[in-house]
Amino acid sequence: MITFNNVTKYYPTPQGRHYILKDINLTLPGDKNIGVFGANGSGKSTLMRLLAGVDFPNRGSIKIEGNVSWPLGLSGYQGSMTGRENAEFICRIYGKDKSEIREKLDYIKSFSELGDFFEMPLKSYSSGMRSKFSFAVSMAFDFDYYLIDELTAVGDKRFKEKCKKTFDAKKGIANFLFVSHNINELKRQCDIGIFIKDGSIHVHDTIDDAIDAYNSM
Amino acid sequence: MQARSPLKIQIAVLHALLIRELKTRFGAYRLGIAWAFIEPLLQIAVFMGLFYFGGRSSVGGLEIPLFLATGIAPFLYFKKVIMQSMSAVNANKNLLIYRQVRVFDTFLTRFALEFVTSFIVLVVIILITWWVGYKVSLVNSLIFIYAYILLSIIAFGLGLIFGVINTLYPEPGKFIPALLRPLMFISGTFFSINELPANAQELLLWNPLIHVFEFMRSSFSYDYDTSLLSLEYLELWALASLTLGLLMLRANWRKMLTQ
Image 1 (cartoon, rainbow over the protein chains, first blue to last red):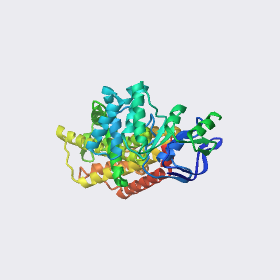
Image 2 (cartoon, rainbow over the protein chains, first blue to last red; image 1 turned 180 degrees about the vertical axis):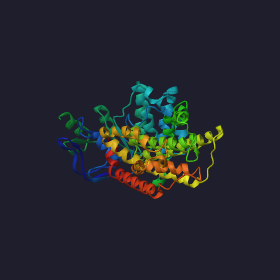
Image 3 (cartoon, chains in turn brown, cyan; image 1 turned 90 degrees about the vertical axis):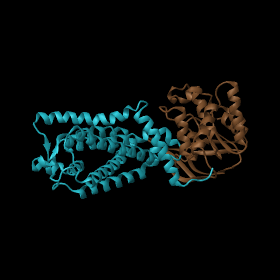
Image 4 (spheres, rainbow over the protein chains, first blue to last red; image 1 turned 45 degrees about the vertical axis):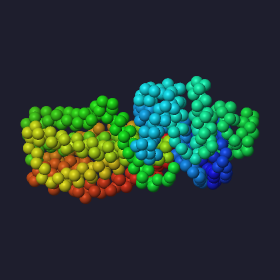
């Protein structure tokens, strides 16, 4: 369950405060996968960062039960470090011991299908390889909430199928918050939708309603 | 996943950041380690040449290489802590997406790495001068270590202050390195405060670095004149800069996450 308690978030601009969220009081159910909609710049990523605890409301508070992932996307990695080193870093900050780290690294290496590129700096990866790597890392850790910020299945049909299966397996034990520009993917993965617009969050009880609202924007 | 204590998390984060710093800092061929020694040695060599042509062989009872090593190496340490702190947040920006990694950790890691490396560099350089055949006798190791620690706290505190400024206001931040460069010439890296005219002494004694280097030198000779120096003054600097640095970070770290 995610509870917003009088949450206000704005960014200062030369023209005054630009509000992303204004006095939001909201409870999101803890057993639903949620699609997040909104125009570019409406604050989807800011919302993810607020939920992930790496950005803070100017007023109010957000409570989440259970442990939450970092905003899973293509960022969060150091280009000068290899795939392995990046993965090791995350294992370490999550307090994994040596044998757990080995296990996670094996999983990430085989899932990402990077082969020898796993030992190469991330900046040498193509965008497809980077996506595969990010996807593998994101799925290697167990959370109650997965904040998915534009992390989409890439690659050929077989790899996409594999990603889908992993998602489905996770869905049974965890919840997803999904930011994506791919409407089909949101439709497939999510139960309900929330729509960020002009500083407020509208909750739609079915994903189809949310998509309709988004399309009529 | 069971909950870990905040201390345990921070230790894990510092460990992870330290390994990341080591990897990117010293490079794939570990040339960074060599550079840590070469930079001070080169500067010492240049000033040794100047002293040679000036016909001096010792200052205050210390032979020239030792006299220079105790000024130049700790000055480079001071400068490095500040420069590293200034880029601590930007260099680790991508990693601040993880809630465990806090802004303070990036500063602390970089400082700790510099604290250890530069101490080793300083000691090794002093050992080299001894091994080459110059007279080196440590008569008061406590004052040597204490001066290094006070220098470290001042550097860390100023690093936090400049790090906050540079992260939030990169434009004025650009002036800081420019200000550090001439600092070397008024910090007693290659002269002793005791040999200056009285009015210059009065002015330069405001600079805490002079006190640090002169105290370090005094640990190698019973005769080194420390009458102008003050440990209390250094302690005050350490306390003030660390307090101000921590306060500035505490007030601004949230803002720094989204810079």
